Image (cartoon, rainbow, N blue to C red):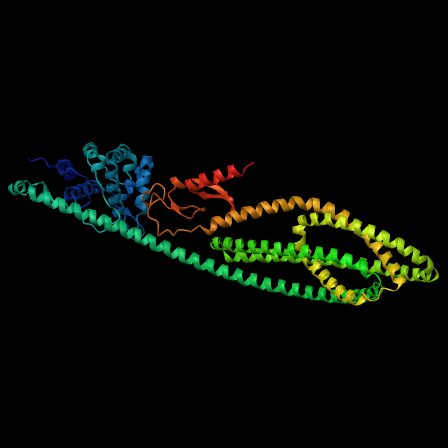
Length: 590
């Protein structure tokens, strides 16, 4: 009688033999092949098919709501819990977009485990935990018996092999796992076809290399397309926001201009009314100044000297303003990279400040004029009283006139000395002259009108009463001038410091303008080598502009920062300009 063998034991023995043959053939062929294995290598494909059959042996059928499920992905998921290092493989398998079935995930898991050279370690953890495996396998399954431990021991030899497998591009869901036994049968033709196999292997290597390059290029192109689209959307949104801000700023500017125009018109009307009243008062006062032409001529000569000094100062200020405007134009040309919206906001803010200062000056001038009108009315009342006294004492007035003339001559000499001192002090008042230009223009117009009237009043020098009145007025004016001189001397001492600082700043701006006139901003396309070291520019050696000379240098030749007249903050400067600027600063130091 023949003993009947268990069919499951026969299946386990056959699978064990096939696993031995596939692992042995894979190791031998890989060592003779002498390079990393890819997914198209036939012995490697057969190894995965054999491992799939070994893992499928004795699997339990799991009932689900719709169908019966029998896959090897269930036991392989347990490795993640038993072996913490397998979490990365499980996470990467779940993240693969092309895998839809559990069988495809299991095939991808096997390929990733082989590339990590830890397939034997992972499966050893499963075999040890037979209690957990009993949920997925029958008691007579290969993984539950000794044959599974033998296969795991054989898998340790695969750690010698280096594999580079592309899991994303393969269709692992629809592959058919059939064992090809012809690979394990030796023929005489195999010995003669080794040279052909070497040639085919070289061709396959080139094919795989080209395919990998194509995949990488496609991925980079798709990423670049997405970046370009995102940048376009961001640019459109920024343009829309800037347009809205421009509209808002323009509307605000128009409102501010309308308000300032209304204020200016109202102030002009009030100024005209006040001027009419002052003209009437001046006409009354001029009638009383007919007999004092000689003294007025001396005063007029002094005033002409003052006017000439004023004209010279104004011309100097205009020249300074022209220089400043030219320097501002050059600076604006250098700062074209700034946003136009910011420049408009800054200009409008400066204009508002200037207008506010202008309004304050006008209010001060109006207050002064009102004080003068009050003084003139008081003097008129006093003059009327003195006229009555003068008619009674005409004889005494003639003697007093001689004394008054002597006193006037002495006072005129004192006034000349004080005016010479003031002329020295007026040189220091250049900054205040900008603010008082409008007020002085009105005074010059009044002086011209007074000159015309004085030419008519030279023949009327016979009235003694007017002489007394004019002498009294001159005394009052002398007192007022003394008070004004004391106030101005204190103000001039404070302004002297400011003028010295402004002159130093103007000299710095002139030097910066001289430097900027010879400066040329070199374009990036025109420079291919560094100007100092003459090394060629590349992706690693980038281009940098010198903010002083405008030439292009490498980072090593322009790794300096200094504040320039065009920018108070420290900016990039080349080595030659850095040495030149430091030498100039050391020479300028006291």
